[in-house]
Every structure is written in C-alpha cells, then in structure tokens.
Length: 308
Image (cartoon, rainbow, N blue to C red; front, side, top):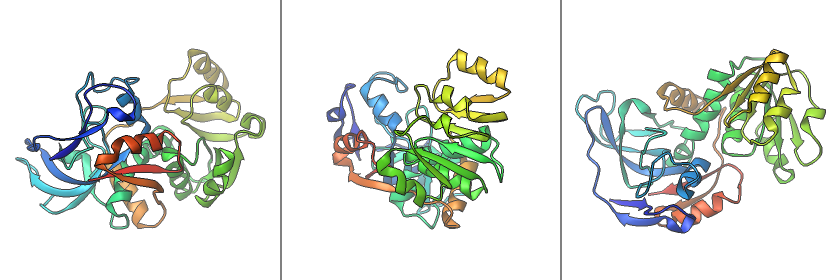
C-alpha cells in the first residue's frame, strides 16, 4: 500500500509517500480501505517533534479516517465487507491513517453518516469528538445555557458551535475579523472579534466555556462564568487559575479526546439530521501531505483532508 511516512521530525517536507506492507487485521480489528484522512493540529505537533505521542520516527501520522471495510479480523461482528465507516481509532497511539489501508479496532469506528461523503466524514472524528466530549461529557451541556466557544471558525470550534446550537444553547463565539461572517453562518447568536478588546469586558453569566486557544484565555474566561459554571479546556490550566476557579465556584475540566463509538454515532445522527456540517477548506492527495500540513499551518476555516 501507499502510505505517508516520516523518518525524522521536522517541517512539512519530512512527510514522504512510500510503499509499506499491507496491514493485517488482528482479532477484534477491521481492515479499512481509507478514502479520506483528516489532518488535525496534533498531527503537525507530532510531525515537528513538539508532542512525542508516537515516540521517535519512523512512524505514520493520522487518526481521522473514513473508508470502506476491506476485511474482518477474528471475532468481529456488526460489520460486513464493503460497509462505509469512519472513526478516530487508537488515539493517542499510532493509527497510521495517512495510508491506503488501516487496521483498526472494530469498537472504535462507526457507520459513516449517509449525509456526508468520505472527505467530510474523514474530517469529522477527532475535531467532532473533541467538541462533543468537551461540551456534552465534560461540560454537561443543557438546553437554554449560555455557551462561549473560542476559535469558533477552527476545526473544533466550528463543530462545537453547531453541536451547542443543536442542544438548544445560546452560543457566543469568538474569532478573527476575517472569519466573523463564517461564525455567524454556523448559527452563533453573538460573534465577537477577539482583536477588538477583551471578551471578558463584554460578557457575563456564561454557563459553559470551551477553551481551545491557550495563553491567558482560561484565566480571562473565568471572569465571564457564573457560579456553578464550567470551563472546559483542551490545554493545560495553571494552578493559579484552578485556585481562582475554586474560589469563584467554577468547575475546571482539562480534557483530552478519546476514541468514542457512541460519540461517533451521535455526530452521525446530527449530520443526517442536517444539524451539523463539516467545513472542509481543502483536500489534498496523499502525495501532497507536506503541502497539506503547510496549508493547515495558515489556519484556514474548518478542516484539511488527505484523500487516498
């Protein structure tokens, strides 16, 4: 099979296409012929050596997949050869999604939603599960709540806005000036340009914040949360911020996304109900993985995808 392999850490140019042995599904695994593989910021961090999830190279990046079932390992039920599936298998271990074939745990994938093609389904799992788990599992999202979502035009953010709206929340989104209209198009009730003053000076009585940016965003987000509110952060939160949160009666949740078949099914239901749509900025063939990573670094609206 063709796969994108890297033999050293570094810039996008370390990604190269090479022939690799076809994987064989073990017991409990499914062999998927990959049609599309989403690219996420974590991929770039691992590639560059900033985040050593996969140890030292060589390795094959990628976790998001959408494709068709090619073969079944021993003991697998519920899937048939030819089924269309998607998922985020094995995270944070190697899933090797940047390839024509991937052997993945059967319980970490789900039927592809009929309302999305492979490119859009392949863009969904990691960002979508991050948004879903952050808002629903960690944040306890409920109808009628006031929810603040930072970086609302990004991969996670644009899905989080839609998930929160689908749950009946009042959504406030922050983004850059050139992405304001896109954030509005997602259904956000209020959109703030983060370059025009501190959002904490403009907001109060927020029930739930999804923090994806870092820096002082967690600290400033505490200022807008009501007592009993929740700050869900994808990044580390300082001890000082945690202490302040406790004093304010605010709960802080530091989360990392995990494989989640139930979450995939929920996302698929929202897709098919036309309550959730994945915005794909651009797709690239496997051979252009380096160019795809370079493009993602420009922070486009939505997601970037590889096609096999």
